[in-house]
Figure (cartoon, each protein chain N blue to C red):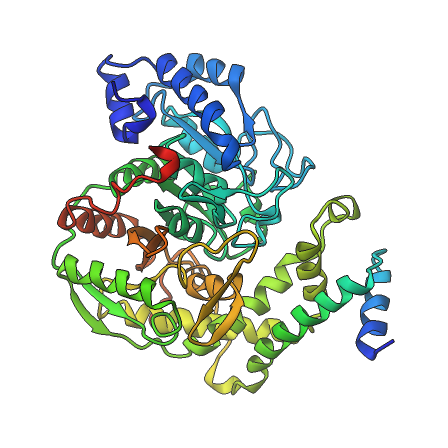
Length: 63
Length: 439
């Protein structure tokens, strides 16, 4: 078993879910794609992206 | 004689008001049409025969008195739990907030609109009720997740439907089925009894055949008048990368032609940090999705299970960063919308793919259609802004394409002005196109 498979199966067992071989292949493919996109967030400079309140009902208030 | 479901939603309401058509006659004709036409598209798997009659006797004399609509499976109704495209009752029966607003205007809910299971998909292929199909060609996807809403309206089974939109779920099927789909500003109506309450992305959506019908439904939903104004002379911003550059050329060409026809002042617009919007959307979406109960989980299709299970593995460290980017993108969008009235681009990367092969080939390569569908639509969900998809013609394969307009928070009336302006300058050429199943 690959590291991914060990880790994924162990994670899922914690919530009582068993996954099949084919399903795991699909999960790994989706996970890899998502992680690639999410890692863009690791590269942002936090000083350029201050934490700000979000009110989705309205335009953001001018700073 | 014109079948009552070939009348617009406005005409239906007016005919009842003037006594030219009774609510009961309209209901009978609608039920007959649902029974005779829906088997090939599976848009409305649950029909309320007797309960519809009861609703007529109880409906208030509002502006939509007696007008039949369908309601997506994501909203609880007083007599039926919301199942969210699964086989299980997930939100107990009760009058959900969005339903109440339409009920108070006098609508009759004739059935449940089919949807992609849990709303996690833009094709409409996976549902406990079976796949939704496109009224333009049943071998093609209706779109999702509100595929049943758009397919029913496109097939003239009903003139309006209550949908929802967490990542394009109203606009994508509207584009695929050749109808109008409007995503409301986030939080503009009560969310109780609605699955959208569990995410910060979702908003109810209204689906109808043209801008005027959508305006009537939207005014009822928002419980305020949305007076019509001229849609000419508006300023529209184009965000080339990726929204125009990475789509099928037919989609880009049809949308470009519609904008030229509109005669609006068009300019190029840049939204700072837009390249991070997809990552921010994904980061927070995964955090909000979670895993449903084992009872629900056991009923799901393999692709939906895989999406949820993959999300479960995502590290949590991305969430606060996603929120920072989300805040920044909202500021960027607000700045862009100070220079133009709205932004425009193709709603979908092309026309509806087949159910058998729901992939598309676009300049960046061959990909599952869900990926560019969500990319083209999620900015409105990430920021909370309203957006509309309006039909702008057919591809060479005789399938519809939609143009998306995204406006400032609370600008639903102006988006509808823009939609109706395109209808006027095109002599209603696009909204009058009839799907084969509607002929």
